[in-house]
Length: 184
Image 1 (spheres, rainbow, N blue to C red):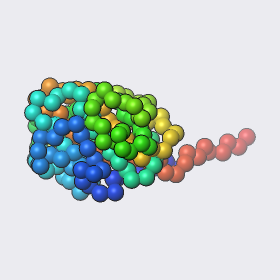
Image 2 (cartoon, rainbow, N blue to C red; image 1 turned 180 degrees about the vertical axis):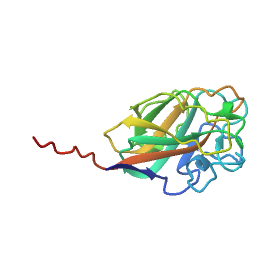
Image 3 (cartoon, rainbow, N blue to C red; image 1 turned 135 degrees about the horizontal axis):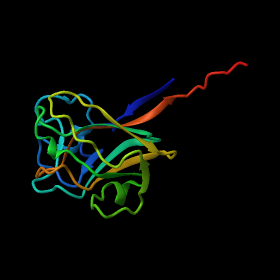
Image 4 (cartoon, one colour; image 1 turned 90 degrees about the vertical axis):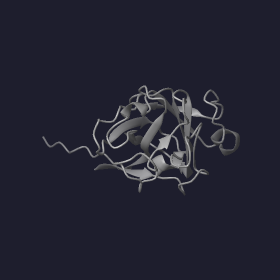
């Protein structure tokens, strides 16, 4: 049986989750990695939101505390009670690193030194359905290396004057695929 388990930062705070810009105290980046935050209703206090006008080139960094081989991303793109879905992130790349100082803390979009790009099954976060409900989406990664730090480079969004994401969870593959025995 194949299953995935979500991996979280050691604490939900600015030490472990960072973004290039943040709109304010109601939209910290770590809100998007916190599994107790609501997936429905208001976006206030439940998702990361970039500062006004920051609709391109945002980095979003997650420190898992220890190196882990992440093979899938679960996400819920941005929305507010089923509306304003155009603030959701769109095109992205994902990166891994084991270098903290100078890499994890560097949120300049073009600075990739110390990071290794990971191949993803798709390079866009799909827009959330226009409804006040959970809309889970998954992206698989071709990744055989364990990294402590993961970075999303969000290039753009769907057209709103902010860039945001409601939930991001990095997931490990647990279990194994078993091929049934064939008898002749």
